[in-house]
View: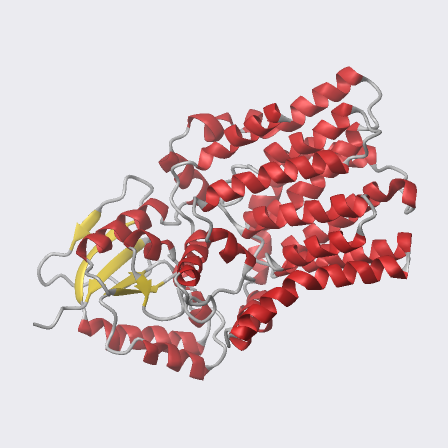
Length: 490
């Protein structure tokens, strides 16, 4: 197990040195506001439940927390495989997760995203269920739900299995346990007079996100992109685990003797349902599939009769992705990893621009970003001028035309710095109200600012290009970030 832990850390290291992605910047800003006494949702809007912000408040790198959680998943999987199974089977599940949780596929394998935290809570829930402790399993399911809402599919499946195998009393214990963590967060936000904002952002208004592709007519193109780009790579990386899943679960029946196998299948189905929810189908959504798939692979190895074949299966599961992509895992520089996996996402460009803003900033200055580059607030050290760290909450699915007007009004005379992303997939203007908002920013707010320069997103080393005297900014769509600064009155 120690060796497998080192394998996991070695595979996870391909993201070391890659700057924060958009989601990490969003969570970090919410956690920073919370740490100084303000509240997420009020001071820094996000649609995620609060568990991730709580974990981001820990006094070390969130990616270190993510690595620790992954090692915890591996331990939970080891102890979930029945003790009577061969040692190779018990090692195969953590071996599979060691590699399947690090895939070099978009934003899947290295960020401290919600899915890596969700996996530990879900794995502990299945472990507790395998021990017949429905109440404890429910508590872990509640924690998972407070990490990401899509874990509700796994919770429903496991609670239904508890009812089927152990009766109504087990179901009631599971439901009671599942209510503990959500109730604690609800009481906390209610005591701080922020429950309405918390509920609307994380649950009520979140349904708009799930339907936005249908409302904008973009669902078809997103599904085609997933089927032609993401899914083939996932299936290739998952191939050994999928083969062992089919081998290990042949003839599965739902009874107490095979409760772990049944729970693994339901966990897998719930994770797939969660990954598909919302239709955006980003690679990191499928990280939540890695843990149940790894458990199913371990159960498949339990049906391999030869100890030598079992040991070979453990090695193959641990190393298969690295054999397919050795350069991205071990040889590529952080810049090459960022370009190969996430271009044209401006990761190093955001870091450079944030540091440029920090060099120019004075105490008390604020920043507004028209785009989705939340990491700018981390690298600049500045707070957002409004509660919307990322503009998508206003431009992608505004609650109403009035909400868009309120967002503009909250900018007042304008913060000291404004960053304007020219990337359409960053600003995500999707409807008439958000188009009017963007046009008003350009027509009324930008004239109060001086254009200071830009960073082009080219795939090469980024550089800040200062604006020449009198140079007009190019606001047409393209891969560039523009910096504006409001003059300080004398």
